[in-house]
Image 1 (tube, rainbow, N blue to C red):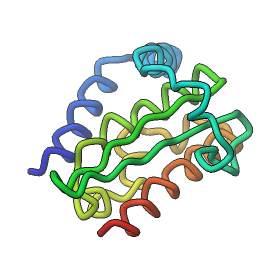
Image 2: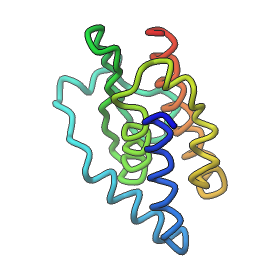
Image 3: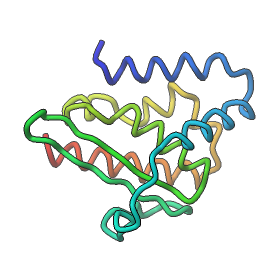
Length: 140
């Protein structure tokens, strides 16, 4: 199993211990609090994710030396920040091919996010995922 799939399994195990969605939301928000804040200059229009009701910035960095992609980001919504942190945890420090091999829809399904989010939050999450996938495809 690849490292990226191990990370998804780790999160899935964490979520299974939480009994209801109220506790899962709290856990997601706690995960978001651990994300380092972006510098003000990083909150540019080019890093902004369109299609989100909240303000979301996602920075993608590919290292030709290691072949790995690193993501960082921030949102003005604590829940979206947490959801963003899930994607950053899973997809950072992976190769573009590893990222492409794990479709975001699988992450949503495995963590049960499809049924737990409002349509606008789900659309925002899909916009974040699309930006991650586009960057991986661009560097594969």
